[in-house]
Amino acid sequence: MEFTALFLATTVTMLAAWLGLRTVAVGLFALTLAGCVLTYLHHATDPLTLSF
Amino acid sequence: MTRSLADALNAVALCAVAFVLLAAFAGQAWLGELPCPLCMLQRVLFGLLAVGPMLNLRYGPRPSHYGLSLLAAVVGAVVSGRQILLHILPGDAGYGSPLFGRHFYTWAFVAFAGAIVAVAAVLQIDGQFEGPDARRSKPGLFASSAAWLVIGLTALNVASALLECGFGPCDDNPLVYRLLQPR
Image (tube, rainbow over all chains, first blue to last red; front, side, top):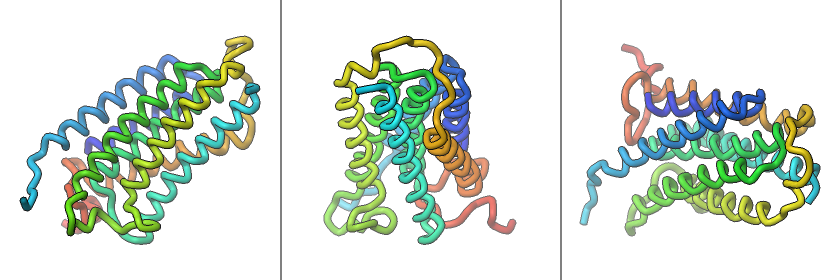
């Protein structure tokens, strides 16, 4: 579900950038990038089932 | 560098992002390999990489627009680098099928690293930033087509992610589209 939200946020960010809403686009970019970092950290802290 | 050359390079950058997203979709559709969570995160970051060129084409080149692309590329390189490291042990076949001998996440790392180098190189040329800073006229057909293609492909990923993950967390190793499964 979080990836659906991230893709949707990215699409809206692109639309804002292309349709001429620069401030909105930069703000949405920051929020989406923060969401990406948080999602990455969530997965990076998963326990790894390594075999050694 | 003139504004027109900067516009052309930014439009080419959008085409490159579109090519990456199309290649990822082709692998998903033809090979039947669903993207893992880290794979989808890399796709999102490729999408964010395109926001800088779009703003450059719409408002004229600005260092701050290139900065957005650099931020997205650095995070993308970190994510794809982690996925490489997850499969670095001898005997690990990696995730998904390789393309030209390398997995998609390895190519993604190369692409993000290349984007960092390309943006840093283009930033060295000050001529593109000279001139009026007013809102630009409508971008050309090539740039518009590339921009709408990237937007369309990202919107398709919204549908793909929804079909794959449904309304819960995504599987680490997805095999089926969750929403298409009979209940």
